[in-house]
Structures are given as C-alpha cells and as structure tokens.
Image (cartoon, rainbow, N blue to C red; front, side, top):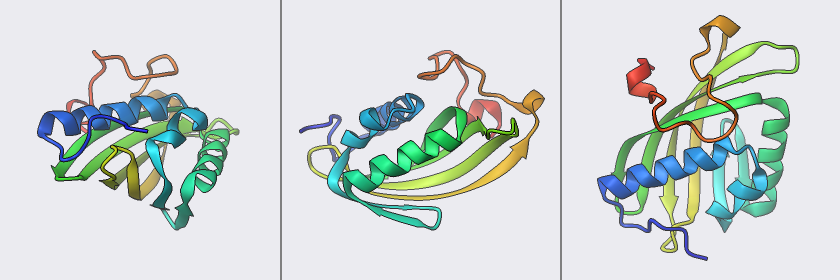
Length: 154
C-alpha cells in the first residue's frame, strides 16, 4: 500500500505529509490513522514504546477516549531524505472539564512506500483555562484559513 507523497521529500512534499498527518489525527479515528504506519512501525511516545498496528491502534483508541475534544496543529521543523521533524500543539479536555494544551516534537522516518516506519514523540501537557483555548474549529480537520503554530505565537 503506497502512501504518497513518497520519500525523498522536498520542502513542499514534507509540508504536504505533515498536513496529511495532522488531518488524519484530527479525525480521532484509529482506523483512519493506523494504516499510515508500516505493519512493524516502532514508536516512542512519552515513556511508552509501541510496535506494530495492534499496539498503535490500541494506543490511539485509549488516547482519544481520554483526550476529549482533541484538536491538533502540526508544523514542519526540518526534513531530509526519508525523515521529517515536526513540532506540534494540541488542545483537549479531560472528563472533569480541565483543558490542556500539549506541546511536542516528533521525529519521523518513512519507508519507501510513504508509510511511517518510526515515530519518536516528546511532549508536555500544560493545564489551561477554557478561555485560553486557541483551537476552536469544529471537530475534524483544521480549516485552511485557521492560523498555524507560528501565526499563533506558539
């Protein structure tokens, strides 16, 4: 299964890949997101290590059951060959109504077919008030006219 754009990446194709990943994650659907990774994809997410579709699907399902009203923005940081580095922020609330903005960085490595083979994520959660939220579009992909991280000063 091919997932264009394929490596090696140009600036434009790296930006396209980042936005495609952002849109998929904003679906909050593990069935949509999981196929973008190789069958044996290796992840480090915070202190959790995952391997393969079964682990990834379970992780994403658990994540979006906990992180309610999730909205994500990713931004290209760097790229070279089959690798892309991104920074991102997402807002979510827990079941008690407390809002958070999570800030992170990811390093991605892609297989020749354009699926992600490795994902290393580091992130931190900052409690925020509902009034401090910046990501207020309807559930789903971020609208094209919504500012990105740099425009928001994040």
